Length: 295
Image 1 (tube, helix red, strand yellow):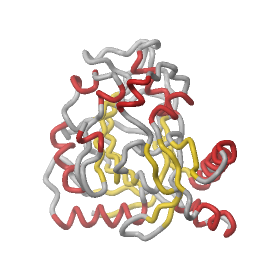
Image 2 (tube, helix red, strand yellow; image 1 turned 180 degrees about the vertical axis):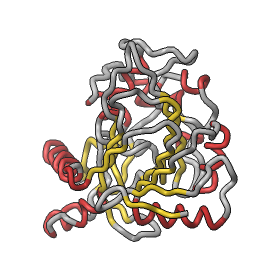
Image 3 (spheres, one colour; image 1 turned 90 degrees about the vertical axis):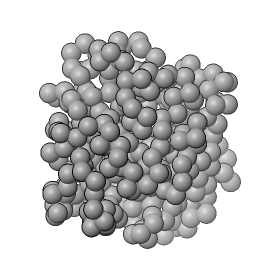
Image 4 (cartoon, one colour; image 1 turned 60 degrees about the vertical axis):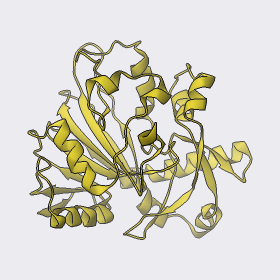
């Protein structure tokens, strides 16, 4: 196993790992070290990996999260894929392309905003592991932004200002920002807002990062307008080109990223009438099952 850097400040490709096999303790330790250093790790050549093997491989790095379909009101992904697989595709349950006006496609519009997976759950996620089963010939890349490197480059006054602040995170905040208007009281009650520190220390590496993104919509201790401006400025600072790695997918790639350390967003592609983009994700929590796992 060896790691090859993909970007000056973060992200690496790791060769010699087969996610279809149970990882040895040495493999688990190698990936944990690589993630602590790089925050984004690409495992190429995993074309042969099944959903079941993907989910089993994830188990060695933390408690697996189950998609909370009941909270979003769209349960189709629970039938197309297995228990631990998040459906990040543009496909319906029968494998056909979702029409442009499909509720699930409108819900997924928020994926194009900079965000961190499942920060709207009480137990934040540790890593996401996204596998490419089918990719469009053009577009559909995923961008990642290193909030650790960005935090390191903040001026001292800003670091002192945000050190002890906390932000409210909600799935419905990001969905409203992406134009999804069908946010009912029942949905909000099913997945209510949660609070997380604005600055987090990443376990193992000990590095700090600010925890922002599209799900964050309010900063406690600041007036609403001032808090929103702060969150927007931090996100804009972290997503400067020097902190961003763009991954252009090849079928069989598994990309692992640390949700506590990086933001990400999905790139555009022609996926309404022409091209399939079949992406399947597992997510592992830090210490114990999250709300989504229990739901």
